[in-house]
Image 1 (tube, one colour):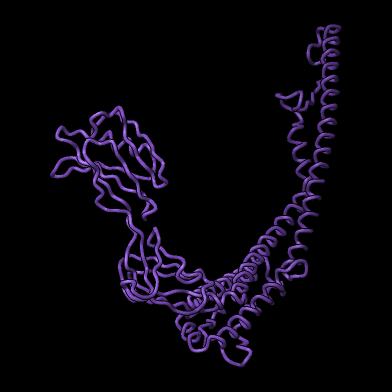
Image 2 (cartoon, one colour):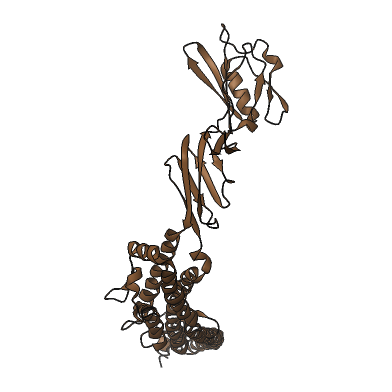
Length: 441
């Protein structure tokens, strides 16, 4: 009788007739993991909805911020300053009281410029071991060590000291000259430097800028000085920067309509971004299709304009309209004209009506915990957490199943190896008892 053999791959691999236990276990584990894969597919779908809801929530939050920027009364009281002179710039910090003032720019601030010429031998310091002496604007004396008496050595020593002045070497028709310039303008930044062979010459004295209110010659009125060309004390909240001498400069401070227009443009863009996000996410086949609370949020955005003003008018009169796709449009020129003609009526329409409606729509969508989007997010967050926990539990369970299979089939392989060993022994014994039978016994 011919005997056959059966073996398993884990411990007894490599011959024909094996049972491949590794493949067998992998196939069994693939079948056992079907419920976990189904949960993972569900989690993928849930996360897609979460992502869309989070995107919509973010866009609606931005819309709320933009709406509140216009419902804030301070947005409509902010002021801007304008100058009648192209050489004088005026600006308001937004809090300046509306009004106007006139003045003359009679002097500009200057930085001190001092030059020192080299001697006939091209040197600047006879005994450079003694160094130079520089008196700073505070009157403090500083000794500057020199590496040599040449113009380049002098300029390097001044610059290395870093005392608020800078030096350069200039090649002139009279020879080399070291030019020392204060890094700040105004008489408060005057300096003095000594220790040269030649006497330093101050070619541009330090000077303050001056503005006079009244007669340009100062015979009437008063003067205000500044170490720079910028003045902050002429009118509370207004900064004036002079670039040239000028007479009869008029600065007007009025409501900053351009700032309001910028905020209104931002509101329109935020509304369109939210509208586009929700439209995309609720389209046919999209993850939020059929979620009617999202349709309601989108309708709230377009409806804020479609309802018109509280007085029965249209927002188109203030530069706000909608196109065929439901997107808001903004005409800044039309808004500026409406605001100039009727500031209070424009504020009532834009701030108290349109912006407030959009703020209410955004709040109803995003407020915690009752907002429509907030509630939907909470629902899907809970689903995601539950599915994640179930998937993790399956991971633990499948790990135990695989371990049990490996133990079971490992024991089978050990037992089979033992039987094969016994079979070989018995075959050998029978062959020794009946040599003539050979391998066919």
